[in-house]
Amino acid sequence: MAAELNFKQELVGCFGYPVAENPTQAMIEPAFRDLGLDWRYLTLEVKPQDLPAAVAGARAFGFQGFNCTIPHKVAVIELLDELGESAALMGAVNCVVNRGGRLIGENTDGKGFVSSFRELDSPEGKSLVLLGAGGAARAIGVEMALAGVFKITLANRGEVRGRELEALFAGPLREKIRQSSGRDLEVVYAPWEGDFKVPGGSDILVNATSIGLYPDVDARIPLEMDSVSGNLIVADVIPNPPSTRLVREARQKGCRVIDGLGMLVAQGVIGIEYWTGRTPDRKVMRRGLEDVFGQ
Ligand code: NDP
Image (cartoon, rainbow, N blue to C red; front, side):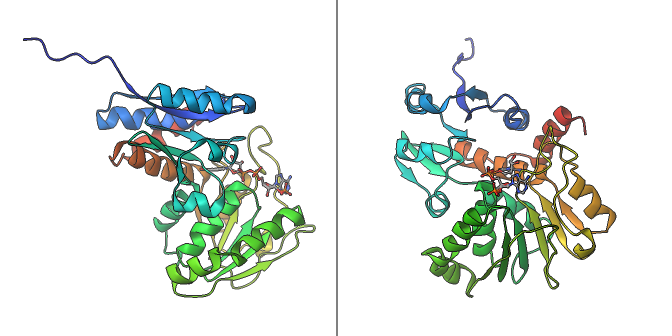
């Protein structure tokens, strides 16, 4: 008797606008193949006004979930059935999961960062300097605080957004952090004028701004490189190109470095776990990205 035939693939994807340069498919589909899963990850251009129809379409097609990227991370919330804890704390969703027909909004960006950080060291008891106050900075700050950093120095070009992020840590999150890490988090807002000087005693420096993102690959972060000592762990969120100017200069100084692919792969691992219940091989995923970036 012939084996049972099944031509129906399970679907996930990414909704964004613009989205053509989003490389996520290049890491997720190789991971599905490696796991022996007949799943597809579709890169879907969804204009802001079409988001409600796109989410209804995902429900109609039985998507197992989807990622949301710019500009949908906040707008998608009212179209979902429920939010996971991180997404509710941050007010942003980057990964939607179909759990028994209900669409649940999760945020894996910060969890991915913490997971890639843990490959080098424990966040516990460390002092973090965070450059930027957008979605990526918010996600990294919240999850690193829950993971036990004791101090966050925040710097952002625009003071209003910087102060908003500072205020987030003073709200209900404060008690959550106390419960999770067993200590009070110290948050310091540092105005960013001219070249930023990393305060002495810092352990971790994260660029969570979009400075250096393709095509502005030579853009320089206003940063006093003499204040970046070799014992800092330096992370850059920029995935394209992975070897940013900051990544290169920090490596030259002997710092331990996390590049933007580290965070991208780690949040993708969590997304695949949410969607399929299986743990993918992160080396397969990183190779998929390195292939497209010619690394
Ligand atoms: P947002 O637009 O929400 O935030 C951008 C941040 O960058 C703001 O803090 C902004 O400051 C700052 N910024 C932009 N240009 C400059 C500049 N010339 N000088 C100083 N500050 C500047 O974007 P996201 O937070 O969502 O994304 C930021 C970056 O993170 C993107 O490049 C994205 O690709 C990357 N990212 C990477 C991920 C990964 O897995 N590797 C995951 C998510 C994001 P201001 O408030 O003053 O405008």
